[in-house]
Image 1 (spheres, rainbow, N blue to C red):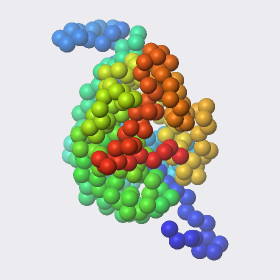
Image 2 (image 1 turned 135 degrees about the vertical axis):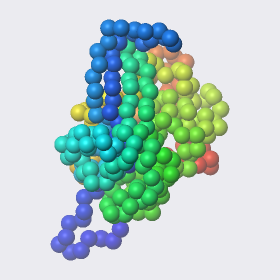
Image 3 (image 1 turned 120 degrees about the vertical axis):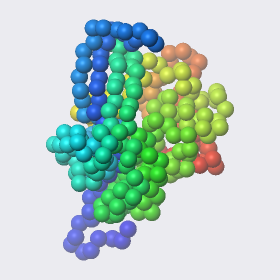
Image 4 (image 1 turned 30 degrees about the vertical axis):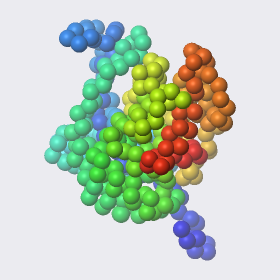
Length: 306
């Protein structure tokens, strides 16, 4: 990027989210139902959600200039748009489409925190590559910008966004949830933020052998299974803080504030080899992340967190 003209300050970076908008119907139950079983005694609540919408809200609340690119239903999507705007997110690039706004039904067991989730993509499934390209061209991506993607949109739309971010030199941040079967090329050169189960799925797609620090998708502790998209956006996570730090909207996250992996180790572990603190068997997932980075020849490229 050419230096700013004399006397003119350089434009502050923005957080631009290309992602999903959902309405989350959350039912809290004494326990999760088994197949064919009915469980009564639950409480029902409705929340604005969607991975992309929550990321945009978290970035805005962290102080970044946040923009959202996505779609909602023409008939039922205005409350979701209004909620984003109320938190300071620019909603100009939200398209209104014929399908209803995406919905997620979430069953949560109050005693253990386990959950079951079913998602109807709705309008999110109609976000096109053409709409994404047009919206990002209007926004004029710059190297100071951060582009955030999550995998609840069609692959063509995600690829279009990633290509434009790389052409502009913008930082690409990807939440690979849910993991797509052919997503390795999309992850190249990006900051990737998988949870333990998603990291295991990516390692499997990359053809990495089990063991050697690669976690199993079925070995994730229950306390780490609550999905990020249903956490309260009122509490921006370390990803949002990192985005704010890059765009000049706030301080960098401290080591104490960093999220912790199931073994209790900070995400920015310096690579020291040790065993899992609980089972004394499972290696730290940091080692698994290093194995994933070593698979760059297969199309994966990770950058260290800022």
